[in-house]
Image 1 (cartoon, one colour):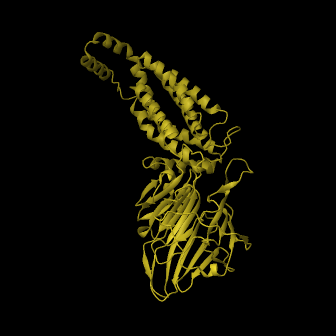
Image 2 (cartoon, helix red, strand yellow):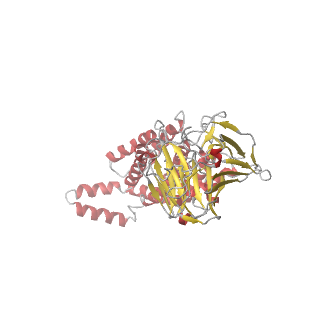
Image 3 (cartoon, helix red, strand yellow):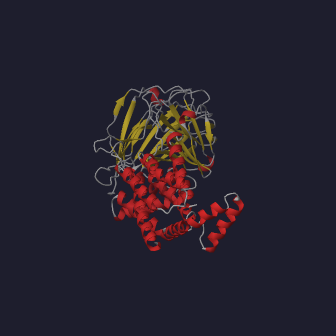
Length: 531
């Protein structure tokens, strides 16, 4: 039974590996400043959008800014966390680079960019008014107003004569990756206006980009307390999520751009493509009426940053669910991540923190491990008698099973004793597997010498090979259950595991390696006592 349990664990890991490989698609006191420099560029026409799309618009009257012949200007914004570039074209965002994260481990590597659109595409955070009386093009040029008193505020304003004034007010927060966006629409006409406000995030889908086999990259949303992920290549028509949308946006393995409405209960999310490589994710408010001379306000929070559990949790909107820990394993993965970060605060090396966490888990399960090894050893002692019974009752399977159970009962040996303790530990292993695979804390985090990035594979395959060797030693020390063929098959498992772990993140390999080392010591101790 003990060999079957080990085989079950191995098969489970192989299923996860095959699924991930072939089926999963892909601080110092901060300050906030806005530089007054503005760069003049030529505005671009927006990409064509299908008529059925919620962002398909037609301009019925030019804005005052367009009548003045204003050109696009770029407004730089810098905080302690990011460097952004906003545009008067649509009063939207053109670039945002994270100051603490780089594309690669090299110190001169470019900063992570979270805005990905082509020059001819509409910009993220553009406004649309689908199905409303207002038809404002996303290429509309806004006037930019910088607050001289509070430089963390930028206001973009545009007007349609005798119809509406639209204001987009951005408020940036010191030391934060999120900022607020207030949308104020004022009715300038003599009659009421039907209004539906859509805030849209645009994302260029590069058809040549290779997908990460371990992570989802595409639209993600959290509606009705349920996470939902979509493959952007499979969105051929408009998809609706909600209402009751807590947040929605676009994610990669370690970063996310999320639109967070102030009133999720009345907000819906629309996803669509332009028939090509441009994905739009729109948060839409319900239709309402603006009386003459009145102003309506719609508020959003925009998060553009890392999928750091502590930061996402602090927003209190469930954004931490964007970390792909899984619906069932997150209750184990999140506490393990918290403990891992606590250990890192004591010893600032995540490789060492993983080793300590491995030891803590092993200590917690030490009594179960002792029971398992002791049970396997006792069953090994009974194998000669089991063999006698197998020979005696080889033609009577029912009687053989009955006699073997009587033998176990007489010697007070539980045949499940070597199996259950291992099965109990499987959820913990998978929880830690998720933690080490998706925790951004391990990204570009060094361990020792040749291991410069715990989220990447061992470049020289040293740790996977050592891990395979420790598995072989552990297999040789494990008491056999009497089936020579099964024992030989089990000795092949270290080679299979070594091949599987060659491309696993080195942090996960380090966990498995030191778990094996501690298990070898525990097994030696039990074998010594019972010999």
